[in-house]
Length: 391
Image (cartoon, rainbow, N blue to C red):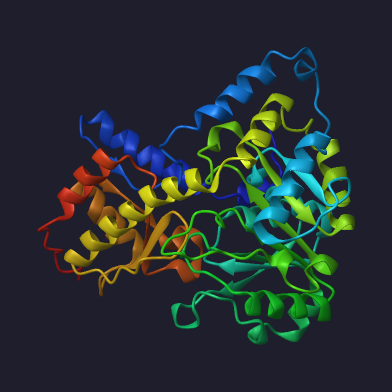
């Protein structure tokens, strides 16, 4: 049997490897505490689940949904964008339902990339930007995200021949995995760069609602010119603890939205309508509920940062997102230190190198672990003396 070359090129999905390590330890009777995967441990709000229950009992929702999503869902999305960001969007042409943001991000390359075309992808980054490009037959140019530059890409450093051949520019703020944030001035630079090279600007904005210390994250679409070249991906997963329901949205330039809808209509049958109805209810959730949810994450952030600093790591408290991104001790690389934590402390973290070459030298810890397990994991770190690195 002969498989496509892309299967041989496809690396194992990062979190599959983490799950296997946990399973191996568990098979030995060892209790492993995982800070590895960003999957909210809290329940979806009750009023949102009530909407799902009601929607599941409606006969029309038992049939195939439309790829673009219910008109009511798209209207709820555009209303939310206006309330939250002051951005006016046409629900008919500038909004689209997704089966989770990951699905839309993965399919986006098929809208723009022909074999040999280039996608500009941050490094480190969510792996799906690169994998989607590979599936479309394109090539990736990695834009290093350096700590000294606030983990923002340096557009001026991209060679002109690469920029002129590029079809997509991916950005993601608040950022996964680094926790970095970007302001409107950065978005303006990205828009100018995209326009000058005729590039589609794709923004993964899934963490804008998970913020701390009074920080309010902007949308790319708030900035002048964004609608000319931009499409933004968002999700209800992290904001409302809805990862398992697989619902998100793309918004932005109407031609780009239409292209993604055409790809989706040929590859999937859309998000279940009952799930879209629960998403409508979620988008009407009060700011007070979101603030309470974020306060819990902020407490976890502070505890994790405190513990990491206590063992000598240079952890920084991010203003947004669900992750702590911290350098490993001198003399270690990301994989070696990750293995050390697993072997000596029975703790799982994610090696930064799993997100790209520029992630080497860092680890990522997720805050999506319940408080009791988190405290138990942090207790395993307290007082631990990190051994000298291997020779």
